[in-house]
Image (cartoon, rainbow, N blue to C red; front, side, top):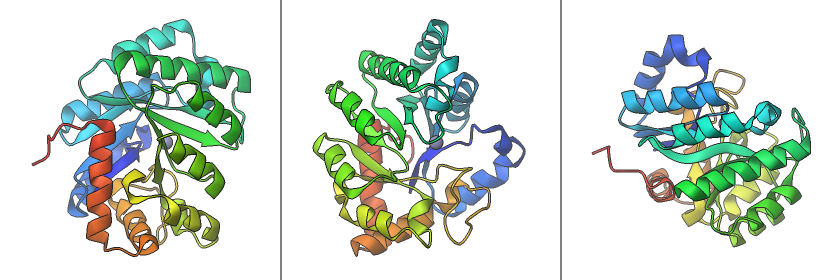
Length: 256
Ligand SMILES: [Zn+2]
């Protein structure tokens, strides 16, 4: 299994990292992609990928922090993004649920990330919440980019639009939640060749650990639920999502 969206770069993992990594390995996790959400966390993601050859880094500024972004931030992000361990730009996107940054600024910073990804030939990891229409518009304005919608929580109609635009879609712990029937119907409808699995740890721990600090080992609960929804074995689900993740991020076969 590959956890396609983790935040082991979050400082709350610093003191428990060895145990978290040991549990991930024991659970059969063979790759972890750590996603930056500001400059320090992006640097830390690269550092982790330099330390562990089965980890990879994605660098970017979360829409929550968009109003902190200066031209200098983007210069530093670009330098960081040139590191060999960086496999995508993100997480970037739009969050109109929290509206932590003004929407116009979120949109500008999103565009800037997509331009950077295009220049460097890297795919993009998108965070989108309560902002479907604008997310779709911006994706359409960047047809040369390749996109992954992470921790998908939008409608089936929206999923179909993203799929038509060539996007990949990744699911996290919420598909295991009790009241998530609607989301499970969406997850069942995403074709296997566009699907990925993730934890988004430390957030969104799946059932039976809901409410706890999430970690990559628990990506298996997401895989189990998706296998059940697609009526295939967990082995098949893991094989296809691992293949998708390797292809989308162009992961070098560092893992034997
Ligand atoms: Zn995230």
